[in-house]
Length: 236
Image 1 (cartoon, rainbow, N blue to C red):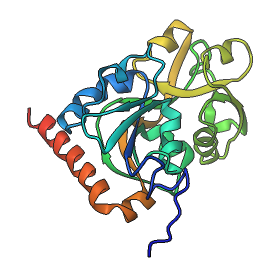
Image 2: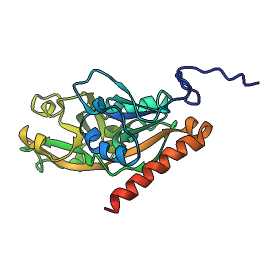
Image 3: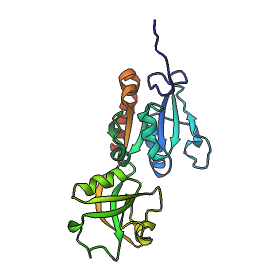
Image 4: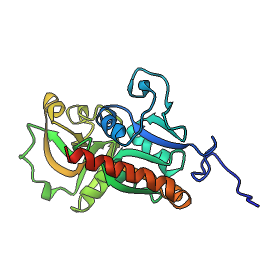
């Protein structure tokens, strides 16, 4: 007799009768992801990509799969805790949080950007970073920033911000900022210069490790479909 008791965070038996949940990020990455989802045979209700929609969970034409749309930073949290069994998130999020519960089998090659250090353009090149012992850094990536500067023997005093990092140097809140950079246009518009690339970033398919162990055929099947979708895209 099966005595397994389901809980809300049990990836093996989700609360709603075994429906698999795919967590996708809001914003720019979602628009890049949409064609890949189509090639993988995932067709959510049309308003899933509508940023003005107040809905967050969307059925697909597969009754065994739902899509939830959340903030990019939250995708990994949903998957790590089993609220979603698969998801798509940037490598920057995985670098920042380093979840043991997450397996990232595929680089989807979308959402290309970089985690970079920037400083006021008028100061760039005037100071020697090799002589720094301590520096203040504004960022939403405190762990990445601390690891990066610690590897150089520099103590990073982190000012955690969730947005408007570009204001921090000009208002004296921090000497540097660490953030995602795509084109560099926002930096330039705010008098900043990208001085160092910490890591290049793309979006990854991620899965909950427990779900992969308990539902290997189902989760493995979706990984295979995403892999085939990538191969189909590269063949074009």
